[in-house]
Length: 94
Image 1 (cartoon, rainbow, N blue to C red):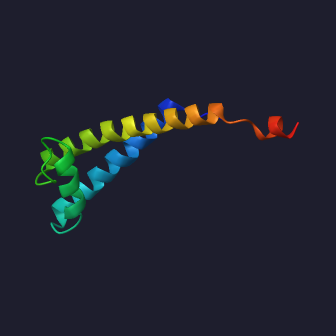
Image 2: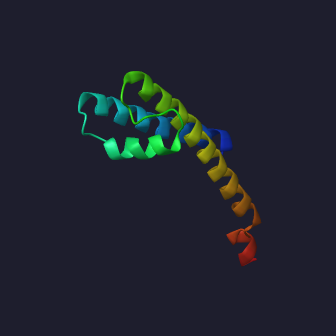
Image 3: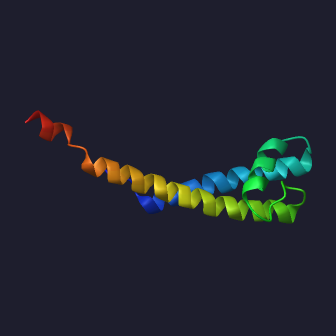
C-alpha cells in the first residue's frame, strides 16, 4: 500500500502550522507558555522571533505550514520508495 504524498504533505503542514499557531497565541495570552518551543522555532525560521506579537505568530505559522508540508511529502516519498522494494507477504508465501 502506498501513501498519498499530497495528502500527507497537507496533513503535515496543517498539523505543524496549527501547532505553532496555537502555541504562539497561547504565548501571547500567557507569556510563559511555550517559550522554549517558540525559541527553537525562531532559531530555525528566519524572521520569526518566538511569537513576540501577532504578526510574528503569523510568520511562524506560514513557515511551519511550509516546513510541515515538505516534511510530510518527503516522509510519504521515502515510505513509498521503501514499500515498493519490499516483497509482499502473499508473494513470499507462494
